[in-house]
Amino acid sequence: MIDVAHFNKRFPVTTKLIVAVSGGADSVALLDILCCLGYSCVIAHCNFHLRGDESDRDERFVTSLALRYKLSFRKIDFQTKEYAALKSVSIEMAARELRYDWFRQLCVRENADYIAVAHHADDVVETFLMNLSRGTGLRGLTGIKELAGRVWRPLLDYSKQDIMEYITNKELPHVEDSTNGDSLYTRNKFRNEIIPMFQTVYPTFKNNVKNTIGYLQQTESFLQEIIEEKRLAIFKEGKQDMWELSLPLLLKEPSAEFLLYEFLSPYGFSVTTIQQLKDSIMKGQPGKSFFSKGNKYVIVQERETLLLKRMIQAEDKRYKIHCLDDFSRLPLPISAVVKRVGEFEIVKDAFHCYLDMTALMFPLVLRRWQNGDWFIPFGMKGKKKISDYFVDQKISNEAKKNAWILTTEDDSVAWIVGFRSDNRFRVSTQTPEVLCLSCVEE
Image (cartoon, rainbow, N blue to C red; front, side, top):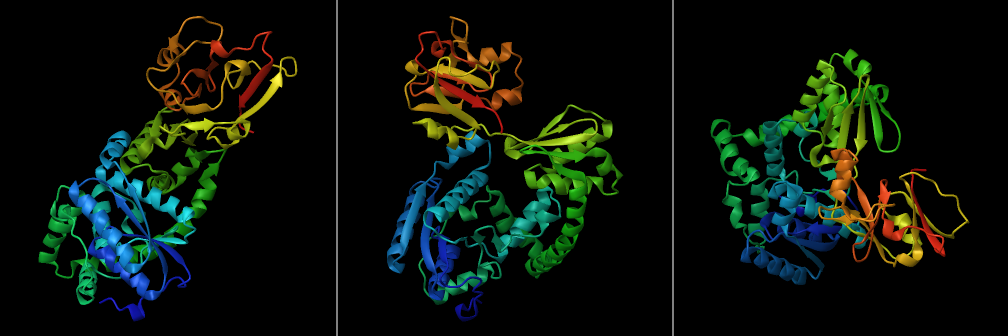
């Protein structure tokens, strides 16, 4: 049973919270408890537009809750299916990524301290079984954490039954998600079918799992000290966004595969990928590459080392450059200065670019290249598709995927960053001022 008088006040009541409210029983109970405790709250609601009119009904209900509790209300609309298709992830994963990204942004914008979400004890059991089923290391079996970064989960000690009793006793209105009974979604299948089957055999199944998670958490805490010692000896940080893992030192360890998982899983490498990597190491196959989920990191296998590198993600985001100062705020280390012809010495490599200022017009745009983009390569007269240019230059798929282009606002390509500039913006003897660009790590 939830007793507000004895509720765990992890933070002082002066703490400002973003409270994620869907309108369901869990989040309504959480909001009511936090308000009863005296916390300063801002209600945050996501409309994922997955359930037609029902999604809009939920939004209207949460809006009414904000009025009832006299709280600030922030909401956002997501085109979740389109995002899932674009990122090649499940609807569940898409919704998770979208909401947590927005919650973190909102936390900064509202000058809040933490984001409160309504996960409860039943969610912990479901997550444990899901992770166990899909394959995971020890970390995936230790359950959902009460505090992870700025995300606080105050209800983890309480079951769904506790929450429903609280809602009933206080006669709190809430809405029901019609998809909760649909086992098409993985979590619902565990909640509605698999866990009840376990309970027919072991009525105390949920409590048993919670106790097991507690033991595993203690085990993980003990192991992490040992793992960290091994990490410091085997896994060295190299240049920026690159790490080196010594294969001879790793293979000396009796639990090499376990350590490999512990080292790499935090970077998003799956059990399957790590197993493939291990098999490749045992066969001595240097030169192979292995990618993390979402291609955020890549491992390149060499003879004596594994190189772990962060990959710049292909994004649809366009960075507008209104003035020279804006170059310092780009995701690439591009420096920019305007000089007159004769005031500088030309560096002839792909990471330096010189453009005729009279042929350019701000704002400029930095973005990823796309199929259909074309340019006139420096020193040539005819158009060429960027995709064909990459093929001619035998550019690797990884390099192509990570290529950026600098364009004018009307999408005329001025520079394929790190490759070649466009002849339309070349500097001539009549050029009065030159935009000098360099993309070099300092």
